[in-house]
Image (cartoon, rainbow, N blue to C red; front, side, top):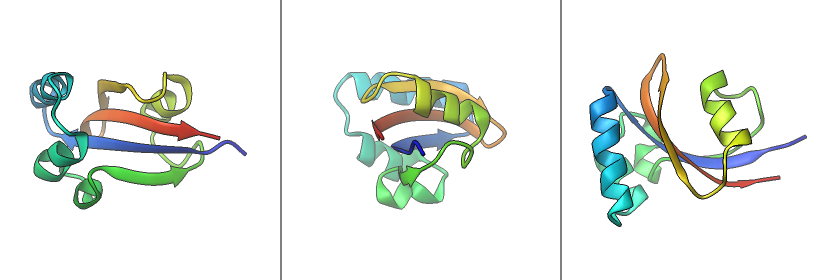
Length: 92
């Protein structure tokens, strides 16, 4: 079965997600921004969600993690929790 490892930053607004994406593009460290801004419990781990299989996350999240290019920040992706910036580290 396929698995993936990803990290994310979860915020309440699209605007905040877009501002953070600009900071990432300017060289900010993903983990530091996640620790400071993410509302997910993964924030304390720099946004690291660990390894998971398809279907463990929401469909919009899975679509990014299992189909979009690796090691690139994607988003903002809207889910019922807010807006995510997602980076897939690897897939098996």
